[in-house]
Length: 178
Image 1 (cartoon, one colour):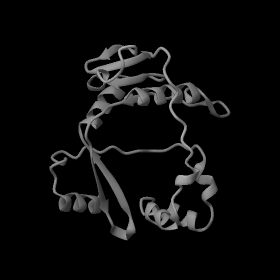
Image 2 (cartoon, one colour):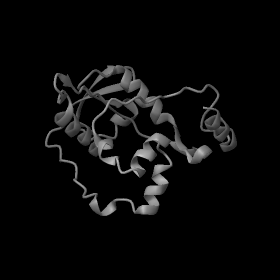
Image 3 (cartoon, one colour):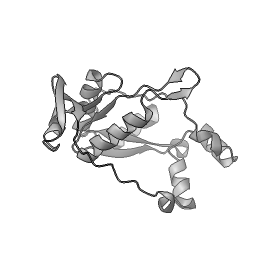
Image 4 (cartoon, helix red, strand yellow):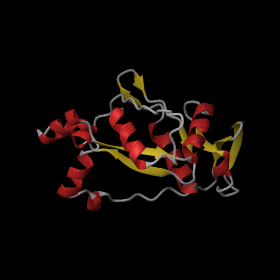
């Protein structure tokens, strides 16, 4: 957890309030939660797959994110006890702590990813998680623009009665419907 908080600190220092285009500044807030999650692959229609992620850490992140302001690193209270005592945190909302300071915090390790890039078969599998329009652009050789910093929309859906106990067949049917 301390390494996660340190990575968050490095990201904030490097990216928060940075100019991403003339007159446009990036605003960031980072939240840390921990615990068991469930990840299910659902879909398959038109060779398109999605991840469905559920678990208590997502509720922690939601609660922490609601309490955070731009530039903050917030930590779910459930995670706070996992930090070294030298890390300074302050309560900002029920169940949420704001990271303040870590004396002599180690820099997170830098990993060389060049040796772990996917091979062609793995790339084909990964492409099934992208919309068809993006896959067509990659296949046509227009992949270089994909690494640009762009506005993005992420949809978090609350499906009442739908959770970790939901049978896989029901999750699959929900994915097809969505």
